[in-house]
Length: 151
Image 1 (cartoon, rainbow, N blue to C red):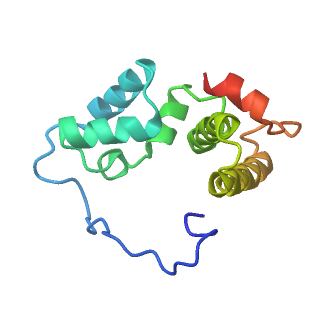
Image 2 (cartoon, one colour; image 1 turned 135 degrees about the vertical axis):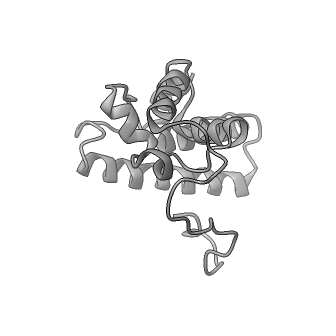
């Protein structure tokens, strides 16, 4: 979905190296890593932030390589789940900030178009999450609801 609204092609960029198993520098066991993930989530971190903290502070490149489970699977096994998916909340936060900008700058047509594109992404993601039962079927997006959820 990253390049849907641009004329760019491809997905160039750095790729993670292929790795068979656990790297030699990681000293934690899989159960310790799972406990770290649960502890960080209870502190209020998002899944992506948990992954960055484990990478930067603990030297754990990928939770899946160490434990065999993704961060979301570890959290589900410990019955810690979010009400809404993280990516749709990030898009709603972006839409709320952009709508506040457009209130004070109503002639900013480029950002008005940007807001339309962000809202289209939110609606597509919401359809996907409704199909996969991560959002209720009657959930609808509106900028007013988004302001309440993001705060």
